[in-house]
Amino acid sequence: MVNNIKIEICCGNIDDVVGAAKFPIDRIELNSAMELGGLTPTIASLKKAKEITDAAVVCMTRTRTAGFCYSETSFETMLEDARILLENGADGIVFGFLNEDNTVDRERSKKIVDLIKSYGKEAIFHKAFDQTEDPYQAIETLIEIGVDRVLTDGQSNTNILEGCPLLKDLHKKYGDKIEILPGGGVRVENIREILDLTGIKQIHMSSKKTYCDNGTYSGFEPEQLAKMLERL
Image 1 (cartoon, rainbow, N blue to C red):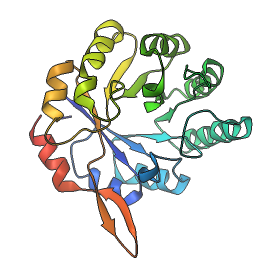
Image 2: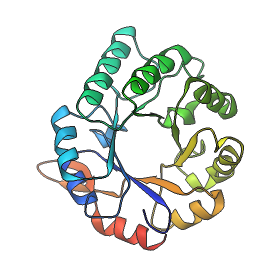
Image 3: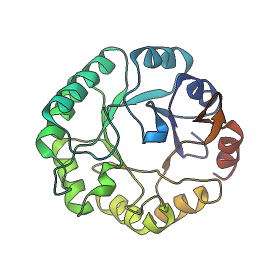
């Protein structure tokens, strides 16, 4: 925590966790393939992350990129992934299930929330929320089924400053029932403005750059995170 602001860092591999753990962060969202929007991490990565950091580690469960409507086989796989991650120390599960009309898939979401709660952990709905047609209806559904937190850029399509009015309104109307976590497009240049405009006391960021190793991949960038934390 920095100046009473909770910090969540998105980490796509164990080297990202090593870098992030050197900073005063509160949570890590652990996934894989960040360049694809984040997929389910390995169990070995989760176990190693728990050894490296005292911060909470919440894990993505997502079998593929491109959309949030899944076959029954994919859903059952994600449910089993969530169970295994929880068994191995995950402090929460990050998920997102939508119907074809871009409403929250209440039945599937409730099923995974019930699983998460049976372990006493946090249920987090990810940026699938930003694809919903009616964010107010969507958040009321998430509250009804027991979701703890929703990650969102305010439906701004990554220009998060444009989403700040919605973020502020969601926080004002529902902040006593569900946590609103701003994330997506958070940069050194806008982090302070996002917090000031919304009044929210937590932020999600990835602090990444492109690395080359017989190809390219996205990885943690410590200097960028240090600069962002200086703005808080």
